[in-house]
Length: 137
Image (tube, rainbow, N blue to C red; front, side):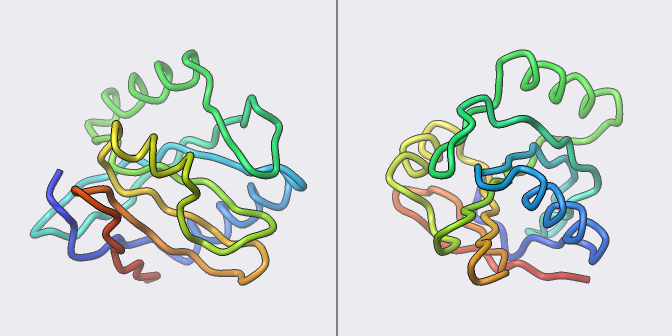
């Protein structure tokens, strides 16, 4: 994937992701994001909320079963898996060293919600970490 110009989320999607993050406290929450890319703008259309099987405040893992289901659901909706979401309950919205490792093998935008700063930031790995603007519509 080329580096997107921006990622767009609706206000409602932001609220759903924040609530998902709050429900999972003190652990990281995670989700798979479906949508499309037009003229370099990634638009989130559906969110597949997942469980963090690590049950950890500093790491997350989505089960293979949920990943398979997510890709199947995206296909049924004629959407692409275009992003990965997770929260950092006690830190900034910047990829950890573990995040970076997985971003290299899954080069789609990663959206991180910082619980302490109440902000969403996005990054993609393209030879190095590249920030992607997040627009809330």
